[in-house]
Image (cartoon, rainbow, N blue to C red; front, side, top):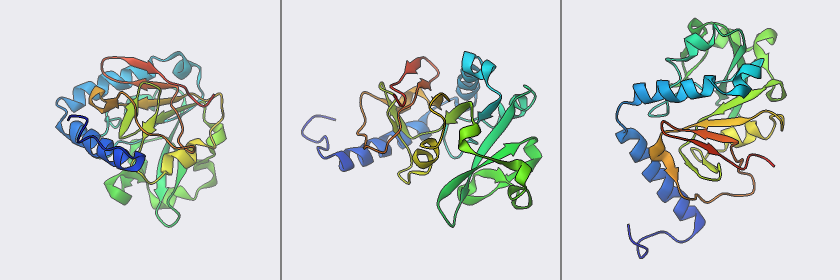
Length: 205
């Protein structure tokens, strides 16, 4: 696209990039194989080896797929935590996942904890308990800038994570842009892992 058709204001640019990134991600071939490679990079991070409580996201739609690696992660001896969406409040809650059978298809066709398990006190996890945080996204840039679905779920959750808990995004290379517009509330990633590279972002410093 030439400069004459490029959007100029930030909000229009955001929607333009979000639409392009989604189309790129849907068109991405070999998602399963590439996802396994990207998840392997995540589990080989020094911060993963050092962590006791790790948040994984459960993939939806055309996101980098984590559900094939999650069962193995449950055997690594760490506490695996997954987020789920409280539809009434549009907030993400955190759940200690011990077995894949604890997940069922819920809001937005995303696998999430069974309703009868969500309220159990021993299953609830607070954001400041996380030692390492895996983050999904629609688009990313070389600064670690992140664009989500536009509803702010993860920005609100990540604002409560400990400053020393690395934020690591998983992305296909086709979701990476030179620069994406960011707002004051947007949270930058420490790392963005793709099938071809590891991008070091600004983080929250």
